[in-house]
Length: 191
Image (tube, rainbow, N blue to C red):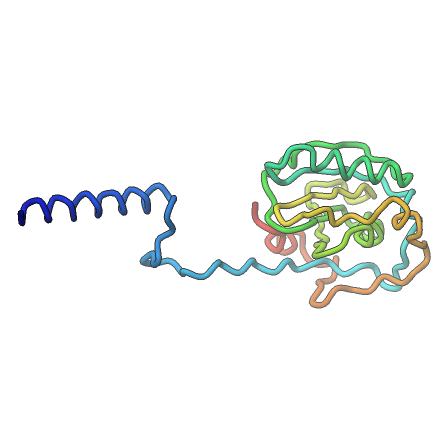
């Protein structure tokens, strides 16, 4: 009878260990790791040019990238943007893998005003970064949709109401674009 109790206990422990090991049941405590969800590293955004004002949104060349496993995400946003009069030159999965945030907008130094103008077409957290791999004179803006993206693009009618000539406010804690490229690249989100 004692052996039967020990055997039953071992079976239960083995089952619990298997469930923990496979991730079906989350571990209540993982040694060496925080049990709280890790806080995302804040993205340090480049400051827009001094006295920058929004441009006509339909004049902005755009690429739309899906930074998630959700099929069709970039296609849906591309459709909304093209119906709003924007020219989308590329729609694809993001070549850099996945993006955990809501919307990431990347561009060259020449495209910063375009990036901050297009950022107004989205709700939620929108981060703007410099793409160090882009030609510094290329005004194209790349929109990366991330894991937190939940249909946060404005409607076609709302995008059509975005006005040119409005002042662009610098995001809190932004860095001047004149910073060294290696410094800016180290501040871009890791993927």
